[in-house]
Length: 421
Image 1 (cartoon, one colour):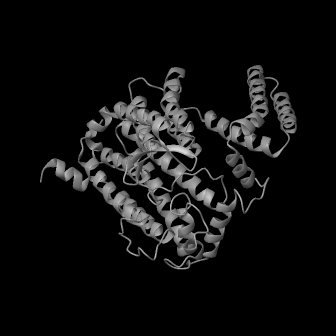
Image 2: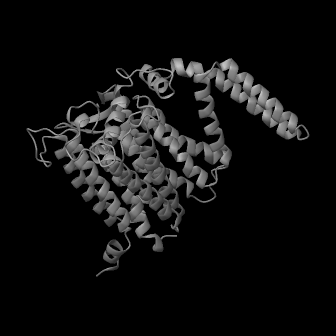
Image 3: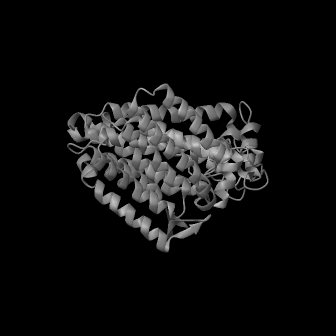
């Protein structure tokens, strides 16, 4: 047996591969349950979404094997080219793309199949980010490097926002964790969470009241540390920025966000209750998950599922099918698999000898973590509905293949880690 063959069979992290296959199979069966049609009972009927998902899984497995057989240097060298191709596709989709559900995010391929470039942009952005940050003398804490990183992440974000697809746009924010791992000051994370808190607070309360609280608390802190003049200037600058941000929240809320997005935020924050309107999906999703109780109603026996009470149940709201038919036990199993996968990805990233592989690994873990947290959070009403799939489980070829690319490129890099410096 050649060294290449030994590398393929023995160095691949098969634990991660098994988790991947388990999640794909769970997704396939739950898609079958979510859109089951008695006229097409076979789970491999290609005229149905569950039949198509089986085909997508087969294509993704072939893609995974192809990636594992590639040379790692090929992936690294072509990272900029892959990124440019997806940016071009993101521009093309704005011109000739097909509008589905208010988002012009798909390129029609014929035969009922569509390509969603924004899904693949996550993969190529991770690659280019890893390629740049792993370069010699690149420190993300420096202004020039941070500016280039912001451009790498910001270009696809801007183009996806133009579709407009808020959910896919926000996914790129998760890459802040990669930058933090590579030396970005933790103050950026603190500032980010502070801005989120101020945004929510400014919606819930009168902005003038929020500004008054900022002024009082800031003044007390300045008085307590009045001996340190440099700290005082920094605190005054921070207060000014916070006040400007609070004043701009109403403008952003009223003029930037789409009406349906504002309603969804209002529902999550408890400002409005609209169980028959914009809150219908989440309300029905919570009913479905709660009705599953401990062990669920059983496969193909979910009443909320069977009678299509939850829209988008095979895509964005697939988790409520898991909750209804497999109960709390099934939900915990799926969440446990994702948690184990994410921790495994972090472990794989940390054991890399190559900075490129480590940075890319953290990118993969961050994106999957964000998708899982937001998707499950929106099905149980903890976060606004922004429409992002549950990795490996939601219906969709672009989603499944893009996550397969993300995962198996990392596994390929990991399999060669002893030979890469």
